[in-house]
Length: 95
Image (cartoon, rainbow, N blue to C red):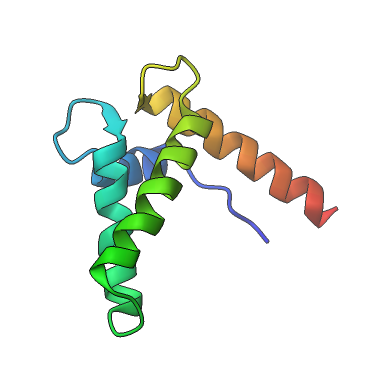
C-alpha cells in the first residue's frame, strides 16, 4: 500500500480542512469534515445525535495526536509530520 503524496497535495488537503484559511486546523474544522463525510456515506444508517457523539470524541483524539505543541490547533508542519509518520509506518508494514 502506497500513501506517499507530494507536499503540494498535502497542502491542498490541509487547505480543504482549514476552512477559515488561518493556517491551523481546529477541532471544529476537523469535526465538520468528519460529519460531512459520515452524512454522505451513512446518512440512512445513523442519526445526527449518534454522528455528533462519535465525531466529537474521534475529532478530539485525532487532533490531539497531531497537535505537537498542545495549543489545540494543528499547523501544516504538525499535519505533515503526522502524515510522514503514518506513511513511514505503512511502509514498514509493507516490508
